[in-house]
Image (cartoon, rainbow, N blue to C red; front, side, top):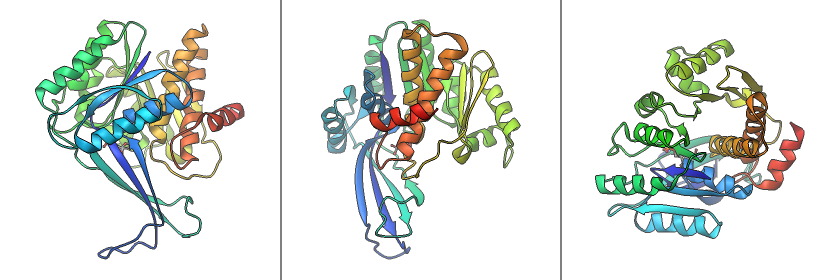
Length: 318
Ligand SMILES: O=P(O)(O)OC[C@@]1(O)O[C@H](CO)[C@@H](O)[C@@H]1O
């Protein structure tokens, strides 16, 4: 079973605007609301491609209730802890489009992510209790930034507790929370090229430097590392030291929100399928990485998150 944990989910309000001017009221030409937060996105994509999973995390207030009702109506199984105070955040994603008649054209994306509600110690304990339901062989995906009230080692503690039970974990977060979690040996981390640049302290890393950065993350404890390289595709450095490279799949970019989360969904879903099919070593990772690429690109080519038909179509091209 795959579990996702979203400490700070969000209602993503994506507004498409042409000819934005600062300092005045702008009217959008299209508005879409998605049930988001990185782990929630992973769950939605897994659900869309027919892979059973359960979404965990924290929700609060009427916005949190709307998020839970929304994912439930999509068929996503969940077991969120309701926080005693506050509201699940609303994140605004603005896409600036050149032509008001071509609403879903690619455009420059600007995100304003809210800070989200405070997480009290009792609620954190309640989440840890829900995580007791995992079993050996399961995968737990910990995705997205946590509110500043969360101790920096909260992800690391979950990684360590799950590893002790034979559960693999994915940690998709940055900064000190990632640094701390690395030492607990997560199964997968997924930085992008900018985060690798920060780790290496270089401005515009070459391909070799990206690979060096990924190896550094392995030395610090990550079992596998996927680095998304924007228009240059992505790479996977697997636990055996093999480098899997994937150029970007060609298609019309509509929306990059959730594309990275969709890669994570494809990877964990594909990894689980490969285990069940008896694949091992290099083949297991090739299979997982292909589904990761197909899911990531299917989201990038859609207004919302990846749907099965497009994922299958893209998979057939790889
Ligand atoms: O603030 P975080 O947790 O880093 O990121 C949250 C977020 O930007 O990530 C998802 C896309 O990856 C969105 O659904 C959501 O709004």
